[in-house]
Image 1 (cartoon, rainbow, N blue to C red):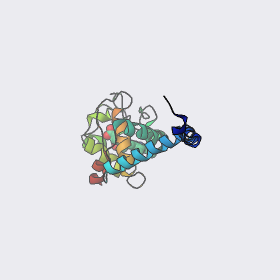
Image 2 (image 1 turned 135 degrees about the vertical axis):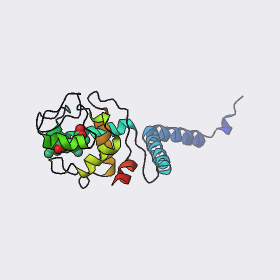
Image 3 (image 1 turned 180 degrees about the horizontal axis):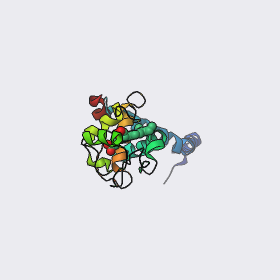
Image 4 (image 1 turned 180 degrees about the vertical axis):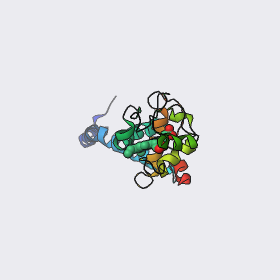
Length: 175
Ligand code: HEC
């Protein structure tokens, strides 16, 4: 048997009030709390040089490539015959020796598939450019994470399927 005196109306009211407050603030407050917890833990986990996922590198790399590199190598990665080498496709790059020789000397130019060359040479070409060519150094323009992203992109886009994932740390030590 419930004795009404054990449930004074103000207690019932305040309980109902708390419930209403919780329902009103609920989703937003809980959302903010979740974000705060996530930020806290990602801050804890992240060292000086965070490891980026392949998906993150590919997404950022695509943006950088299209803004910075596609003017010459084309958005398709196919380059322009005789002027800008393709980074994809496995077709010979028909161009004057002054263009093809530096690539061959690096042991890097292999039928247009950039992924067949080493990651180290790839990073080096983007950081320092290729002397006496229109492939300029990008070390001043792009930071380590951006170069890691664009190299990862080139090695995995357009059917290049090296699976290589380049981290900012690798670019840092190549500088
Ligand atoms: C102004 C035009 C131009 C732009 C912009 C440019 N490149 Fe190049 N790139 C070249 C040329 C020309 C070569 C070939 C140079 C040579 O060997 O004489 C080249 C070569 C390369 C190579 C070596 C290719 C191979 O098969 O060995 C890589 C890798 C490369 N570029 C990546 C990039 C990336 C990444 C970007 C953007 C951050 C970029 N390039 C922007 C003109 C350009």
